Length: 185
Image (cartoon, rainbow, N blue to C red; front, side):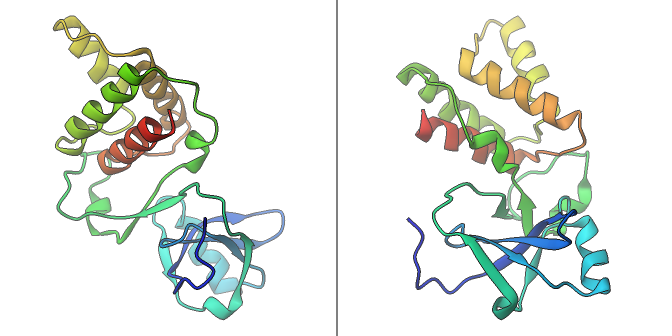
């Protein structure tokens, strides 16, 4: 449930091209909103928002669309967490894009799969394993005798597929997604 009394911290994470709106999410309560009237300069700046989300300080211009979405499209960056070598600039970003689409409809999981995801999230959080190499990492672990759960393999394959379309999952986001799946199971 979204707190209607939230002190919103809006972050631009994408654009709605057809409607020429900026897509924003409150990092605190996960409300989704739009900026319906971006200037030409604001629209141009938002071009990079999917890979470099940034804070939007003009809350009075945000039209709240969903208050109880509960799906994160952006998370606060933890600068003490490892980063991968794919995008070293992410170390300096205050926010990271979390493709919330991946969390919309998780398949049912067993308690063992949920525990496996939690353990895998812990390992990824301490490594530089991004979404584009997670599936390969699991294959390597299996060759070494550590069998990954079906849920881990499904999520890794999905991340690999999405990464192939140009959406990056830094290790911090991979760990977040794995933990979120473990709780949604």
